[in-house]
Amino acid sequence: MILCAICNREARGFGFCLSLRFDLYPHHHFCSMRCLDRGEAIAKEANGMIDKTAREIQALKDARRPFAEAITELGLMPVFHDRKPEDIAQIIEAVITGYVDSMLRQAGVPERTGTFDYPIPF
Ligand SMILES: [Zn+2]
Image 1: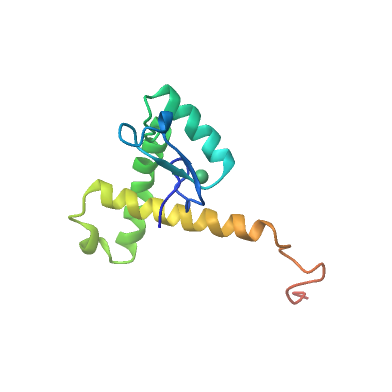
Image 2 (image 1 turned 135 degrees about the vertical axis):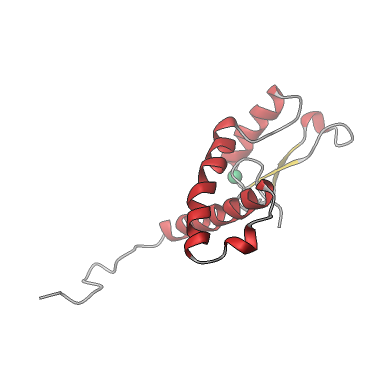
């Protein structure tokens, strides 16, 4: 699966390469016109490159603590103990992408039927 260079969701056929020089610059893939527009602007300012923003890098670092707390609580720390920070970041990004994708898919469907979806508690 190819990931969007901006949001890390699955890319959906949108792409950009500075000056269409595939021999000189990376070809970036995107999930939507919105990400393509943003990615194109970034790549044009950064000599064809798109890197994680400082906020994204910080958010991934900040997410390591709750991740570590969760795996410790579940007894899974020995499995992850020797993994590189990049591996942990990949796991966190995968979870975020899966969660966001699901929320976006569900956004087009009414959450409730218009009647009570659960028994009245009294
Ligand atoms: Zn995207």
